[in-house]
Length: 523
Image 1 (cartoon, rainbow, N blue to C red):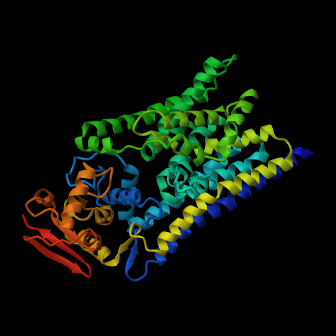
Image 2 (image 1 turned 30 degrees about the vertical axis):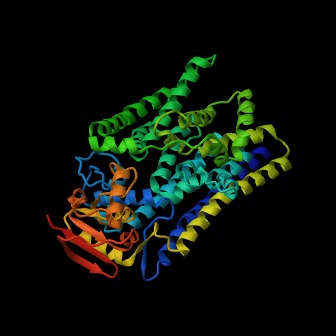
Image 3 (image 1 turned 135 degrees about the vertical axis):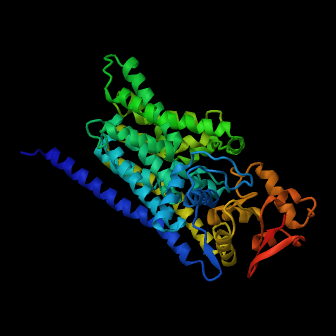
């Protein structure tokens, strides 16, 4: 006869499953509806650029996809006039470009379809991870809700005029990852899948070692830093079990999974390093690709209020002698250390960090408090305090839609010019354009520009300054002759905003529509 406790456990599991399904629907709606509204709000004079959050990087992803659409498997810097030999990096987006060409879909539509698919993968992996990692079933719903929809207290800092990381560092938070791009969500999902068997081998759905090489190789392509994180976590688990436990009963899954990940992940990482440091163009790009961590105050605010419970939770959990779920504690500790480690790529390791912070904090709360009323009150308070930042972010996106912000909308005449350029110019053409226009050209035409991105343009600030002076009329045709290495010159609304500019002699008008003109540079 089934015991009463078994029935309660089964009921709680069902409740948690239904919570997952409802959360999945809510996540898809709230990370898709704003894009639909933005598309429908463009009107007759504008075209939606495709991105409501971080259009700078979003357009760079489309530029990578465009290279795949053109049939390339080697990535070259599209925001730099000089053409490099390229390397097999950013293969995820190049692959999507190939898919777009084969299926005949637009790059923007495919990007958002894949973004939603990856968000679903992440949510399924997160649901399963919390199910196997959090032993107290009563704590799982709160941990899941906070991990999926929560954020920090940036909304409080905003009242003081400060914009903290929880508004824009999307890779740290599942909701922002799902809202911004596919590779953040897929990277988080794959990481959770790879470490779930370490937390609880018997209950994990992802036990099959034959799948590990594929998962690791995919993670290395999608988010290389995830492989480093997983290797460190597994290495710590192996060391802990082998040398710090009295019985030294090392589960076979730990060393085998570590070896698999090392074999199938490390070669990809070494190739990336080799490609970056042996190619002068990529080396110059890498020297500009600096992503510093937020300050300690920003860090605390961006992960509050739940992080305030982490330290007492760690003390409480360690006293209880954690089992295999210590990997969650390791993730929090390692992620925080790497985030503040003195190197150029600190912020890359913030990805998914909100998840272990939430799980450790919630587990600690349920370990310290036994009164159901107190637990309910704290849970409600945490949810209420953790949602406003994401809500404000969505309203901010709505503000950009209402005002037709130029960073997310493109003039219809510009779009017509982009279509003409993509259909009537050689693929290796370089387009001279204002810095703001240069962001869109590689993403919508596949052509290179002199400046368009602060990281992916070599000598970015120098090139940007030259272009701004050129379009202001401060540089004569003699002084800007090095700029005319390009084949075409773009002149539209963004160029006109820079100042009074006179089209120099020696240029042939090849396209004109409304406010936009395109000239061929005669050599």
